[in-house]
Length: 568
Image (cartoon, rainbow, N blue to C red; front, side, top):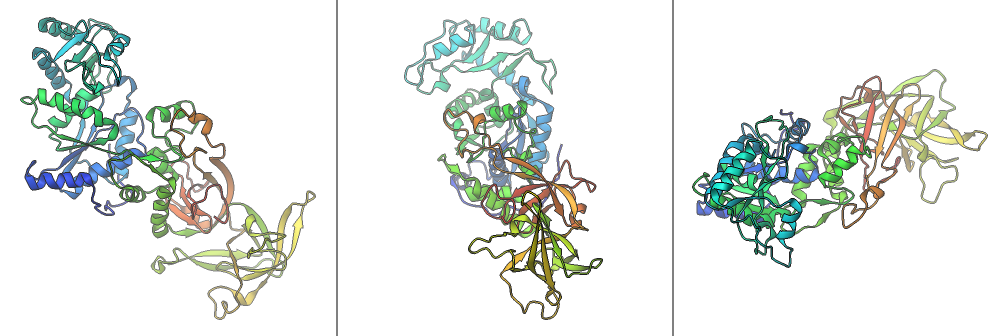
């Protein structure tokens, strides 16, 4: 299921990196006859996150740059944790980012028959055996990083007995966990992944694609390399945690050299570590299932569904992937870099609108009671071709509460008693009085206006004032729900060490307020993005936005600060 991207795909650049150097060298040597074929192989057991976006941009971007193709392949070998919901969300996220796999959509389950045949072949070659030890015993026999493992008492089981047991496993004769199939490699290997790894296990579980045909399922390390080879992948790009698995990747394909069409090259790169986020799929699932967030598309999450609903654009994520680059060394990327990429994109692409997030009433005492007039504001200050929109003006307005200070601090140039400011796109006003309630709280500000200072009229700009604030006519402003999102965690490294990440959740990461919006915002389409002047960038919620009840999410402030509502 494909979802059309919001934008036409255009890679921001083609930055050089060590992977491109490898491919360039391969092409010079004619290793693959100039062919470049990559793959993005997610497991359908959760929603994709920003770390996956880096891998998507790398795999699809390299294929695009070299005139090759990138496969989308679901490694669906663990049906207990997989679901069609995840498959659909992954397809939607890849398409939304702007990438197209064309006819190259695959599943590891497409190869279950061949994987089984290859396993029988390994048994016949004396390269695999049926293990009767329990999982705990296997772990004990495997040894440690500093001490070698020891051979299982079943390692030299006769080939015919291994074949018979494996076929009976396939036939469903045994319960889960009674047997596994292990590759016979080297229990003394310094690489623990090479100490006779398990390559098949019994699981009496319904598979979303193959139904009940299988009750044994191959392990990821065995499946992945063979799937790459069968699809004729040239460069198998994966993150650094798979570096120690590369010898196993190569070993399996070396044993099947006469059975598979090619031997792809596995190349590892550093995963994305982003501050104030977690990238662990297990922990993301815990957050969702324990209802600590509002589902997989909660705008505070690092999932692609979440950042999309937050207001991030495909271009901003591709720009981010370009900016952080590809390396072999793990490092932390500050969240502000991602936010700056979004600001850079939205500064160019987002129309301007006015919304009052913390309203304070402003009454113009010398403005006629029943009069109203039109003021005109540019849809984008640097794009005159986008035209202007009408904002109605009247006697009673709303301004931001932070734009008035009864006792102004030094350097405060907005409204205060006796001070003048320009109402943006309208008139200069002077504060003459304030109304307070019984608790001493300011309920309204009274001003007078200078009718000769209306923006856009001859001579209106001749009188200069330092302050310039935004406003809306109280008569015409529309109520809107505005969701102010901040970082989900208070700690920049919630997923590091032995930290209890749940104790680091930011209690103020979501605030819902009733704001006032200019009338043009009520016609916004879901996922349409705007700059709310002086308040940040916002998006019409893709799920809840309705003309009768507009809902906007704050994507990012105008500069790198979090927790500010007005004046940011």
